[in-house]
Image 1: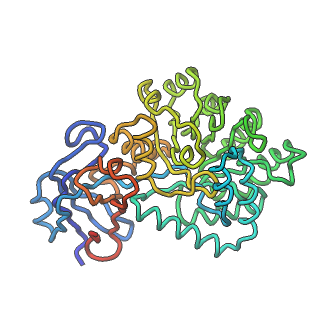
Image 2: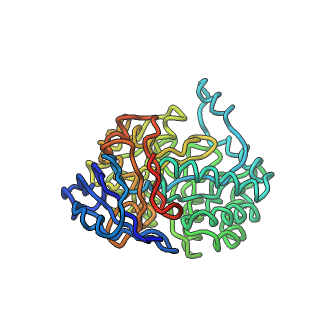
Image 3: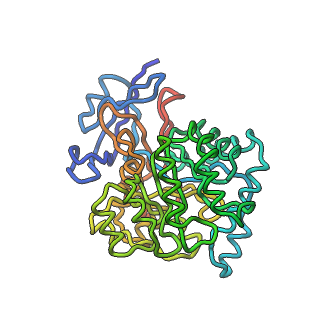
Length: 402
């Protein structure tokens, strides 16, 4: 079997490398080709550019017939390990009931009741769904166990699917601790963290003073600092339901990402612009909760690095579609199609502190998504249409072309 796979007839190749192609942030190369080497450890890009002889002299290429290729999407915020259904909550919200975070407890009950094999199969199905829509890198949080045994179990299962695992024992306060919130914070920072840390890379917390179920700034700081002390890297859920201290806390602690960012003051934006913390926007949440959309244009114009992610979860956004998020960011958040694509690839990779994904370079992994369209603009131009899927190189001798 030839370990080289060549792709030609690429109408537009997005590399996210300004040193290539047109010199823009997307690093666009028209009439492009790719040469990929397969091995047991994965697929690596050997050549990308416009010299088709680099491909044709090494293998019988696959002609993509004028389709576009982009880096695989990086979904840097998901909650995939869960059981149960909250469609009734969604229906009630569409009838006017506000979102407060209280519905998470129903998912906790269903998830605790599910066996390992059931949860594992649910994650497998959700990951496959993502892959069919062009996502190749996924972060997965815990947060639906909220006990020592359950949080470590959810992270152990998540670690079977990704290296980007996040301990979110600080998701909400479970009902059994409703009368002693400080005792739950002590549990999160003590035995729960000890049990979860071997399976986690990140620590996260829902810092939201506008929710009776989430955590205030002092509790959030304690959870994050204790996680950092255990070797985990910080991320923060913040400023989703109203103005609050979460963004400032994220910057203070050097968090890689602060997620939601729906309500931001001028000081919040300035702090983000002066920091390395990425603002991860989750437009599917605003769509599913009828909440105001974050002002992505304001962030970009002030020099903030912006990422897009799905926040796929059973309560506030049961969608795994990054193309849907791209379309919403363009329509509702003020991003251009190019900015939205960059945010869902390179920006999201930066929020995970990854340099090996979210862009296409020689020597890097061949994490590719193929569009049934000649340009990346169609991701926003044709919302809701399944025009993109991830390419794989670990099966047939050539990637499938739909």
